[in-house]
Image 1 (cartoon, rainbow, N blue to C red):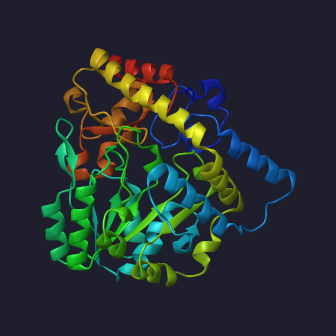
Image 2: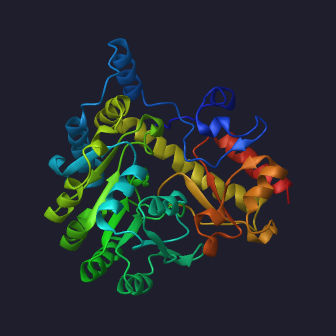
Image 3: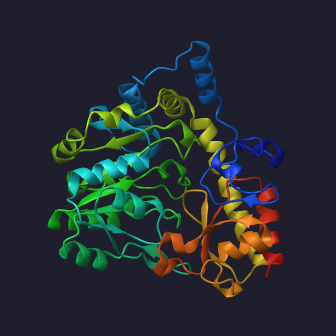
Amino acid sequence: MQRVAAEPLDVLRSRTSVKWRTFPSDVLPLPVAEMDYPLAEPIAHALHAAIERSDTGYASGGRQVAEAFQGFAATRLGWDVDPARITCTADVSMGIVEVLRQVTERGDGVVLTPPVYPPFYALVAEAGASVVEVPMRGGIDEGWSLDLDGLEAAFAAGARSMVLCNPHNPLGINPASAELAALAELAARFGVTIVSDEVHGALAQPTTPYTPFLTVSDAAREWGVAVTGATKAFNIAGLKAALIVTASERGDAVRGRMPEEVSWRMSQFGAIATIAAFQEGGHWLDGVLASLDDNRRLLADLLADELPDVRYRMPEATYLAWLDLSALGWGDDPAAHALEHAKVALTGGPAFGASVGRGHARLNFACTPEVLAEAVTRLAEAR
C-alpha cells in the first residue's frame, strides 16, 4: 500500500488552522485532532471546481451527502444506512447537542465514560443536562472496556441518555459488538438514548474494524442515534458537515423534532467536500491508514528506546495516543511541563476527566515520522 506522506513543517506552518496558530514556531503542536497530510485530491478538485463556478451559496446537498454516505458505509463500514433516515448539520458536536435537546429535560443525567473527548462535558451542559461519569474499566496494560455494571447503575438511578465514543477518543479502542449489544439492552431496559459519536470510525485500522452501534441489534436501532461525518477521516473539520443517522421510527421522531435550522447549518463547501470524500476518497484514506499504522508502531518503538517509563497502548483506531506519563513526575497535568520544558504541545489528561486523566496526556501522531521522533526526543530530554 502506497503511503500518504505528511507535509513537512515549513509547509504546515503556512496553514492558518488552530493547530498552526496557537503555539509559537519553536513548539511542535501535537494536541489538536488535525492531521498533517495533504488534502485528498478528489476533495481538492471538487472544491476548486466549486470556486470556478462561484458555487458559494447555501448548501442544498443534504440528500446527496446522505446518499454518498450510504455507499461509503456499505462498502467500507459494513453498515446498511437508509439515506431517508439522515439529517445533515454543521458538525458532530452540534449534532450531539441537538439530539440531547430532544431526548433529555433540563437537569437530566447524561452518562460520559472518561477518559473521554473533553468537549462532551460542554455539550451536555449546552443541552441543559448534567454529566454522570462512569469511567472506562481497565487500563493501558490490559486494555479498556465499558463498565456495564456502572452503566446499569447510572441508568437505574435516572440517567436519560449517554454519549458513546465509538471508536473511543482518546483511548483508540473499538468496543466489541457483544459489548455494544449489551449496552443497547441496558438502554432498552431503562429507556436511555445512546448518542454514538462515530466520527473516527473510518480511521479504524483494517485489522481491528469498528462496529457501528446501529448495526448490533434491534435494541441499538431503537434506542441509538449515530452522529458522524467525513471530517476526521478526511481532515476537513473546518468545512462543516456532519450526519445524524437513525434506524427506527423512534429515532426518526428524534430527528423530526429538531428545528429545520439544524439542517441549514451544513456549509456548501462541507457538503461538496463530504460527497467527494465518500465517493472518491477511499484510495487516499487507505494510504493515510497505512501511514498511521506505521506511526503508531514507531511511537511504541520510540518510547521503548527513549522513555521506557511512559506507558502506551497502541490504538486500534484514530491517530491519537493516550500516554501515561505519571512515572516522569510531571504532576497531574504533564502536558504543561511538556510545553514549558520540551516545547511539545500535548492535550492535558485532566481535561478528559479529572478522576482518570491525572498524569496522562494525549498525543496526535498524524505527522511525519521525523516530527514524531523529534517530539519524543524532546520529551526525553525534558526529564
